[in-house]
Image 1 (tube, rainbow, N blue to C red):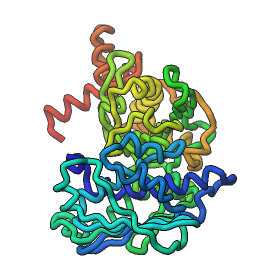
Image 2: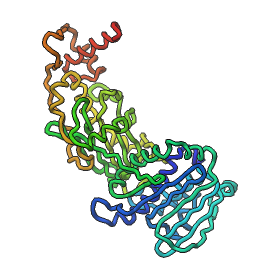
Image 3: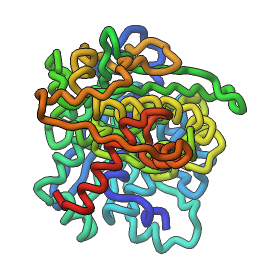
Image 4: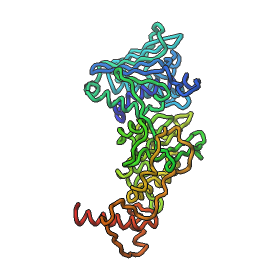
Length: 436
């Protein structure tokens, strides 16, 4: 069933994808930083109806008859796709219609022609063939754009749309998913409230700079891969501008790896093995995510004129993590993750020394300069406790180097940082035996 694997918010975002793709046909020809300025999509709903309308150019009658409403032939619908697109009209609309309600009205207008398509979903479901012919009724032209209205909502959908927190949750999802397009001028409103993009920023200063690498995939040179990663913030370090302070308020949603396909965020704030956490062995090991790494931010941008070359799942909420393209990108992400987590591990015992070196300003991810690896403060090898004289003691003992190195790998300590290994071992024993 085409709707079983998709949530309501995913279904709505499918329709927003179509609006953005329609606007892209014009925006791609514009110059400047705001090519989507003037384009919008407005979503309105209550417990009895759902509507999405846009001003993104509309669809020609020929395209509707030959591609968009041949729902049984998604391959044909792909002919409506634009370069670097993020959606397909046929699949996205079909999922929305089947998922949400029993009565649908689609209206489209270009500068020269207009039509509307009334759809009775129950009758459609009863039809034995996928290639059911919809009647396109001519109407007077209006401002170029499309409108989809869905009524006689299913009970579960009606309840969800009527939930008090749903509009805010949808706005947050839109802000996270379409930040790039919102920054470039596109406007999405939910019940009259415009989504505001979430800034992806990283810390940059004299001693700390994020990494940024960009390349054509070796097996699929038509795909461009870009990896940007560094620290958004460091614990205890004062932010230096309002943008960073704003980002800090949403810290829980901004830590981890993000993946965007053609600038649409597909994976957000991932801290699992899918993006390398808790994988590898020995010198290549990366520990599982720990709150100690809060402030880590990484963004992978996969771009192709042909969206089918990108490894996104049909829900656009996940990737095909077995894709060779993704595996090659992951191999280039992991050394950057390893460098940042190694620094975080060492920082634990050098906080006083580290904090002055970590100050800087927040820069947008797309403004980061190309750099193969992150620049991080060079902390001394001696342990800096920052405690008053007489408040601490030294504990020393000898063990074999082999045993120390093995324990160090499990503790994710740098090779030879035996002081850190000893402290971590003491802390562990203290927690287990003393319980504080």
